[in-house]
Amino acid sequence: MKAAVYPTPEGGASLLLAFRLQSNITLVLGSGSLAASRAYSALDADSKVIIIAKGGLGAACDEIQWRTARGQLTFLDWDSLPGSSTTTGEGKLIEAFESYLTTASGVRLVCMTETVTGQRQSRSFAEKIYRVCRGHNIPVNTTDMPDLCDFTFTSSHRFEGADGSSTPLQIGVTTNGQGCRLAGRIKRDIVSRLPKDAGAAVEKVGRMRRLAKDKKAKITEVDVEDEEEELEENGRVLTPNRPVPSRSTSESDLENSKRRIKWVAQVSEYWPISKLAQMSDAEMEDVLAGNSSPAPSPMTPHPESTTSSIHSLALTRPGRILLVGSGPGHPSLLTIATHTALTKLADLVLSDKLVPDAVLAIIPKTVEVRIAKKFPGNAEASQLEMMEAAVEAAQRGLTVVRVRVISFICLCLRTYPAFQLKQGDPVVYGRAGEEVLYFRERGFEPVVVPGVSSALAAPTFAGIPVTQRGVAESFMVCTGVGREGKDVQLPGYERARTLVILMGVARLPQVIEALTVEGQGGRRQGAAYPLHTPIAIIERASMPDQRVISSTLKDIVRALDSVGEQRPPGMMIIGWAVLALWGKGDMGVLDEGGETLDDERVDGWLAGKENAAWRISEGLDSNWEGL
Image 1: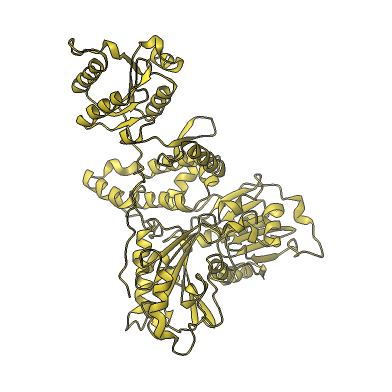
Image 2: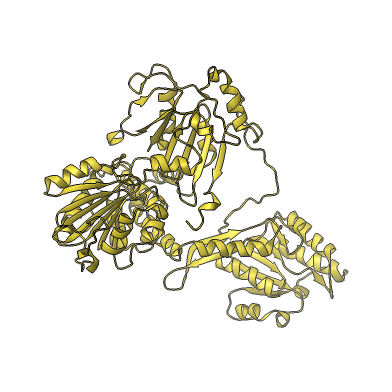
C-alpha cells in the first residue's frame, strides 16, 4: 500500500482572519467614498480611525466630513504634517508620513485608497508608502494594486437582529483578486440562503455562553485557562459528541462550568437556528441546568385533527399511537403521513436535536416547537422526559408531534393525536420498541408506519450501493455505540458483505481497532478486516452540506482528522461496495482470485489525488435541486 500523501499547498489563497481592533488605530490614506467605506468597516470593528488626505477636510466626501464632525474619526491634512523643509512634492509627503508613523503609537493597519499626487495616479508614490509601512511592520492594503497589499477586504455582510440592530454574525467572500464583482454576487447568494434570524441565534448563543460561565469568578486563573483550552468553541474541535457529564450535587464550580459550556457547544451544533434565535433566558438556564422542560401551555387543537379519509392513514382515531418514519433528512423524502401530521395536525412539536431546519420549517408558525436535550451523557433522561411530555400533553387533548432522528410517534387521545417524529425508520435504532412498551403500559397501542431508513438512503446519496452483483451479496446494519455508551460487539469480515455502522463516528479509532486488530474477542465476532478494506464516512446525508470521506480502514482516522470539525450525524459504510460505482465501476471483487487484485483496485480508486490515501466529496448531486 502507498503511504498517505497530504495535499500540496498550491498558493494563491488568502489566510482568512477576523481581527479584533479595539483601541488600535487604522490609518486610511484618502478621503473619497472608498476611504469612507474602509473607515466604517474599521469603526464597526471597534478600531480608532485616522484619515490622512490632501486638500483638507473640505475636499473630503460628505460621509467623512459627517463622521469627523461627530467625533467618530480624526482627519489630518497631509500637507500640515511636519516634514523636511528641504523637500517638495512626493518626497515631502513621504517624509511627513514616515515622521508621523515614527511618533504615532497603536497604528495596526494602513488602507491606501488614493495614490494621487496632482491629477495623476502615481505607482511610485504608492510603492514608497508601502515600503515605509513595511519598515514599521504595519500591514498595508493598496487599492487596485494587489502586489502592494499585505491584506485584502472581503465582500462582507453583517446580519441584523429582530430589532434591526447589528449582530455579531458576519460573513465574507473573497476571490483573491480574480473577480471582485462576482464576490459580491456570491455573498448575496449566500446571505439569501441563510435564515434571516441567523444573527439573532448568534446573539442568543453568546448570551447563553456568558450565562454558562457566570461561576468562573470563583475559579482560579489557572483553572480558567485550562478550561478554556479544553472547551474553546473557536478551536479545532474534532467531534461535538463528547459526553456531557451528568449534573451532581457535589460538583465543583469548575465542573459545573465545564458541564454548562458543553451544553452550549451541543445546542450550537444541533438545535435549529430558528430555535436558538428564540431562546429566552429562562430556557437557556433550563438547558444549562439539565432540568426537564416546562410543561407545554394549553393550545387549541387543529380543526383538521378530526377529519379523516378512506384514502389516508386514520391518524385521528382516539387512543392510537403511530410510530412514523420521516426519512434521512431531506424534506422531499418525508412520507405523506408525516407531512400531514406536521403541517395539519400538530399543536406541539417535541423535536430531537438532529431533525434539520428544512423539515421543521414546514411546521406552521402557530405550533409550539420544543427541542429535546438528548446529548451524550443525557440520552436516557431526555428520552424519558420527552415521552412523559408527549403523554401529558396528549392527555390534555393536544396534538403533539415528537420529532426525532429515527422514527415518528403519533399519540392520540380522545380525537386529538400526539405525534413523535424521528428521522429514518422507526425501528432502526430509533428506540421504537421502548416507546411501544412505554405507551402500551399507559393504555395506548401503537401502530408502526415505516419510513426511509438512513441506513439505506445515506449510501445511495453517496453513490454507494449496499448490495451489488459481483461485489456485495448482503449487508448488515449495526450500531457503533451500545446502551449507555458501552462498546458493542461488531461483526467479523466477510468479503461479500457490506457493513453499515450507525452512530459510531465519534469513537472512530475504537471502532477501527475492534474491526482490524486480532484478539478482539469481546468486541468483534469473526475474522479481522483487512486494513485495505474500503470505508466511507457519510455526514449529514441528503442535506446541502453532505460530506463523504472515503478511504481504507488503515487511513480513515487520519482522513477524518484532516477535515477538521465533524458534521453530525455521521455513519460508516465498510466493504467493497464503497468503490463499486467509482469511475467506470468495479464488478470483479467476487471473481475467483479477485482478492489478489485488492491492492491494485484500491490504488486505482484513490489515484488522481497525488496518490493520497483518501477522497473527500462535498454537497449533493446538483440534480437534486428542486426535488
